[in-house]
Structures are given as C-alpha cells and as structure tokens.
Length: 251
Image 1 (cartoon, helix red, strand yellow):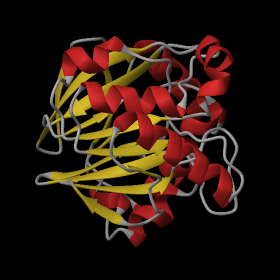
Image 2 (spheres, rainbow, N blue to C red):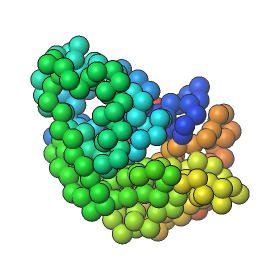
Image 3 (cartoon, rainbow, N blue to C red):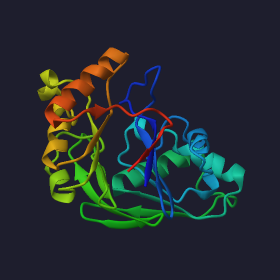
Image 4 (cartoon, rainbow, N blue to C red):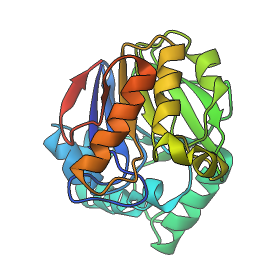
C-alpha cells in the first residue's frame, strides 16, 4: 500500500501545501480521500488516471474537504469514463455532495458514468479497490468519519481526540492525524472539533504506531510546521512527519 498526499493543511492553504487530501494506492486499485485542491492533476502526477479511480471517501461536508468534487465529475464526463465510481460517506455528507453536484447539473446527464453512493456509519466495513475499510465516527462540528484501512493505516480525519481510534485500530502501524495547533490552545481547538499536536502524538503513542503523519495544520510558514511536528513528536516519543506533497509513502 502507498499513500500520496495532495495537501496536508487545514482550511487555510499555504504556499507549500493545499487542503488535506490524499490517495491510497492499493493492490486492487486506488481510493481518493476527500476532494480538494486539484485532485485530477495530482492523480495524474501519481500515475493514476481518473478513468481508473476506484472510489472516493468523503470524510465530511466542510468546504476544504469537498469543493473539488464538481471538477472531478466534470473531468469524468470529458474523459468519457465508463467505469462506475463508488462514493462513500455518512448520509448527511452524501446528501450535501449530491446537492453540490446538482448546482452544476452533473447528476442528470446521459454522459456520466454510473455512481454508487454508499452510506456508512460507525462500524461499517467496506471493500474498495481490493482493500478493507472499517469506518468510525469522529467528534467534529458536523458529522464526520475516519477509517482503518487493511489494519495498516488509520485516518482520524478532522476531529477532537477520539477514543474510537484506539478501539478500531489498537495496533495500526501508521496514523494520519490532524494537528490543528499547539497544545497551549487545546481547549479552544477541542471545542471547535479539532486536536492539538500533542493530542495527535498521544494518540499515536497509545496505539503503538510506528509512524505519525500530522495533517490539517493551521500553518503558514516552515517554522509553524516545525513547531507542530516537534510537539507531536514529543508526545509520541518518535518523530512526527508533515507529509510532502506528491511523494509516495510506503505503508
């Protein structure tokens, strides 16, 4: 399995990183997680054609996680994609996604491939692109979901510290966890449905992860990124990593 990040920032993009969005390259195909930035171009840079993308998991309906979905549908039509596409999320996010696509009249066209909308909730097991996904809910300001993939990688998505990660992935070797700011602001972050860098590191330590990627940062400069990674690493007991855009990481 490989993970390729297309961006790892929170709602605000920086010069070096867009909003959090990534693709999982599995044995049986590829799964895009969230839809922000310029995912079609990023997929091509990763050697993946939109015509062959297996599925999209949408974690929640906030702008920075879903705004590029209409562009994906537009490109699918232009490519004359024939392969059905699976889109999985909680029901409120699916409803919002369909409404967003409706603004651009993407759903009622004869030249669009079949789209299978899969509603998930905590405990749902999915098989996408040959990989097993287990879904859990995350404590955020809107309904939001994370997942475990193949017992190898867990993505917490946006959310305050979440005990579901320990229940669903007690020994996953790789954790992708948001770290919206430093622990001095933890009370404010948690109230907004976010986590601090220290809390991300603590979660990684509790599940005995071997690697921690921090994402969802509110970071505008390299010094901001370094501070978040340093604090998360101190709590984790190992280095925490802010992922490089377009780099393929082996899991």
